[in-house]
Image 1 (cartoon, rainbow, N blue to C red):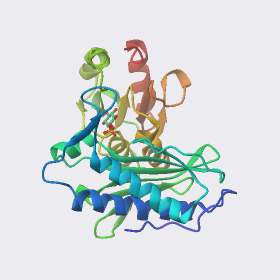
Image 2: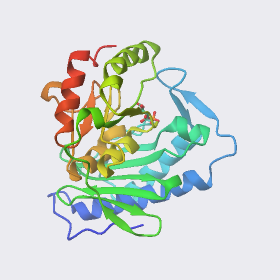
Image 3: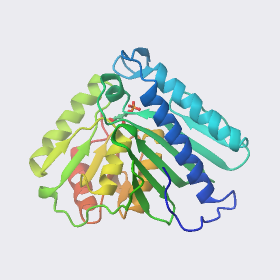
Amino acid sequence: MTARFAAGAQTGRGNVHDLLELAITTADAAGAMLVDQRPADVRVAATKSSPTDVVTEMDRAAEKLIIERIRASRPGDAFLGEEGGASSGGSGVRWIIDPIDGTVNYLYGLPDWAVSIAAEVDGEIVAGVVTVPTRGELYTAARGEGSYLVHRDGSTEKLSCNTGIPLERALIATGFGYFAQRRARQAEVLLGVLPRVRDIRRGGSAAVDLCSVASGRVDGYFERGPQEWDVAAGGLIVREAGGFMGGLNGRPASAEMTISAGPGLYEALHDLLAPLSPERD
Ligand code: IPD
């Protein structure tokens, strides 16, 4: 799969276009490996923050593949990977990787899981790729160049999130954490949200949720808990599709709270959430 962009902008640390192309080919390779080599019975290799926060051997294999491929082309870059692949580098470029975002979906054979790769230059995300192999969809964005959905047959759509959606007609994606206490609070927050919106979706992958905001398949998204690797690529894809991503009260998006939506709805969703204290466990 390839994305079509005009000449790539220079960052001073390299060409954004080159970083994007490397992210695309690497995410494609990891996605193909995860589909082709998925064992009939995917097993949990370890648990992380709680018994429901799982990692499979396939998460580890995909992260290894991604880091090895990028490092072969760009040996001086730094990495942050969900499965522990953190290393420093001197080039000013850092790759933020989630080898499988939606591991529980992958474990159960549900389609919505993604490989997410973002390139950050001097602390700013400049290129992002989220591939959803089971759907044959590859989402891409380069800073200042828009975001695109490339289908399996090579056809490409420029993405544009929904704008001006009133809260009561908004379809909102969300997710839940891995700790029982946090989930209990998240259920309380939902009590305040659900009666005020069209409906709620819990897809199981924050990266896919953000791509769904970018493509207009949902109108907004909020969640307490997503980590940098869950939202780095998807956040750029949303912004380049005309949407917003941030936290509460003007703070940047973080594991405390991440909110995303198009203009108009973003403010209303924020103002609905803020009094519900969604950052509290
Ligand atoms: C999880 C998914 C899920 C979200 C969790 C994430 P993982 O990522 O994105 O939708 O609700 O907050 O941790 O663990 O499958 O990489």
